[in-house]
Image (cartoon, rainbow over the protein chains, first blue to last red):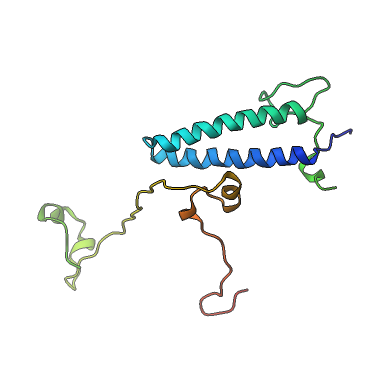
Length: 90
Length: 72
């Protein structure tokens, strides 16, 4: 199959997405027990906005991050373009 | 330990928790968790590395010798 190997910039972008997404997870858990902490909630909203922008940027350049209805595709079908996790670093 | 329950509760307490033959009373285990206050956080990349965005919650795994023997 003709996989598009994600370049370094793509890997960096993916790392950034992972880090920002992790912040939304941790702030989400914190807010579950501190629902009135407005500062934490503002930060959560800020990270959500960043995350959405980063994901959009990534998906435009490198293809969908998640399948089954989470991102549209151009032709040909982009889901199978990127290397599978076990093909990384080959 | 001195019993901290008022009489009303004592009378309703199951026998085995209250009046041991020794006269001592025992309490059931209770868990307490201090309320966390958000002060500062790691940067997103640091947080991902540490497994938490809260510096006060970092618990790195360190290999130690087992009690009564060498670490395997």
